[in-house]
Image (cartoon, rainbow, N blue to C red; front, side, top):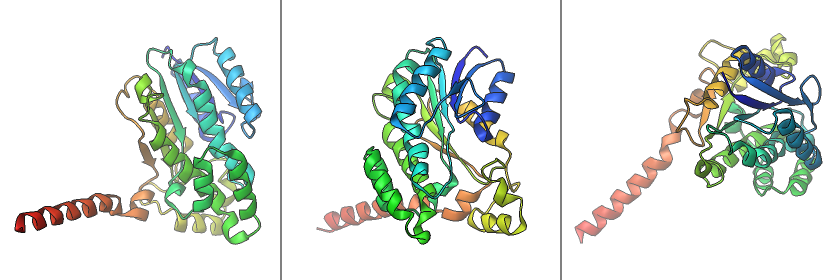
Length: 279
């Protein structure tokens, strides 16, 4: 594979699994993380993101074919908002002009099946304004109440999923020939989930939240393979799509209601047509 990848969060978890698989296939990979990668970068601050992009592009000798944003945390505090949302959106946006110079540019990010779970609308809205200061204020207020503190994580995943759909078809991405898509994992065996999944009570709690009828808990490689295809030259027309690689969790949680908005709209349209014809 004669392609150069930049992967954030490549020091562990899904990011490392993706980097390892790509290297085994012959790709050049520049990893970005706090430690253990080619570029040590802090994606929790605007200055850190800018420096990380510059260092990663330099490490790639100025030529980038694909970017995969995997870096993320799940702490019930404002840091999660900074890393999970701005650490992805700002990194991808800053590197986009370099990526666009490739003959087959691709970009992907990691969301989560948690994006369909209950969230905090105020935090989601603040994140989507791309105003980090305002978002951090909301996240900080959430941490004062343990009933909503744990909603920080899924709120960031809802926001990044909506950002994806907002940005992917625009001139800067689709118009520049860059497919931008995402993978939404379910219960993946990573260092971030190990503390919960490796205890009986923790696993039972997570299985209740993320029901997984197909093959139970996932390996990191199951997500890596999907990310690699999304950022391959074979993916020419997927735009703004969320691949739920989650053992069926999203289907169980949402059922068929993903179609109801269209059914309601069609019913209204036919009702209006029938009324006009009757007159």
